Image 1: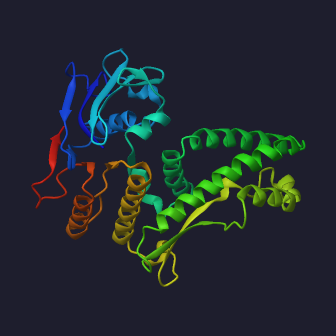
Image 2: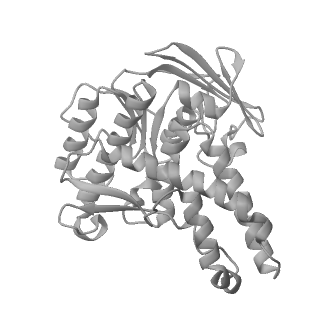
Image 3: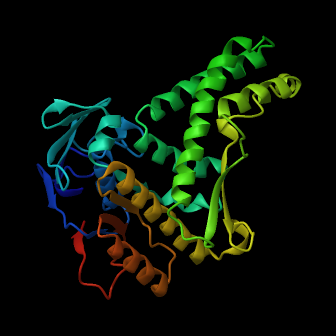
Length: 337
């Protein structure tokens, strides 16, 4: 899939003219400008139109100068052709070809892979950053996943409150294990599918802790085994909140210890492209890649590596940057804000 053109009105800092309309190239699109020019804001509008929502609170999307609802729209083509619109006030109302659509269903129409500046800590950061990476893929491939994750978080909060109040958490046991087991199984399944696309011997991906049998059964046993510890700690001691993505090199060393900062950036790009390949394989649609400042802190060789790898995919790519990171290339669409 690809975005042919997009429109924003009354959107954050884009209120100086009645409408900002941009036609996009089918390959690499560079969104350039100084800090505060609106590069990330424009990328955010594409995130909304592909079903991932705003980068922060929805009401912050509204124009900084005009007290009116914001609007974003796009025409997309490729495997299918559609018009997507988003009316944004206190919430986002999405429409596909003038019919209401949920963000979950919209992601099936325009699959996209999103990389934000904070995602640079995918390898070095906390497990929550890696869980988010896996969860986005799961939400893309299994529509019920996002709701199940939200329902599980509610059960987790309820269980934690009961423990802090000194009450038995027993009434949450079954939903905790059923919902948590579904989440853990899907995470392990999607990482296993990614591994099938990685050349043998390059590195391995796995979700830890390892689980034998079903994750629901694993959690039921974990609740029994950790009952006393849970009462003392006032929180569950196992489950989806403890999952982590282990990235191990061929020599057995963790990627976080063995790679330089530039090598980690390249590995992140490889993981994102592998995610795109899996998306294309499972959804029968080429994904759109949305990257915020992907090339920051890379030297010239690193930036050329990024350019070559992205060109090879043949997918539509959006990259924000203060200036053209691919100075030797002339095959990119450039939008300067």
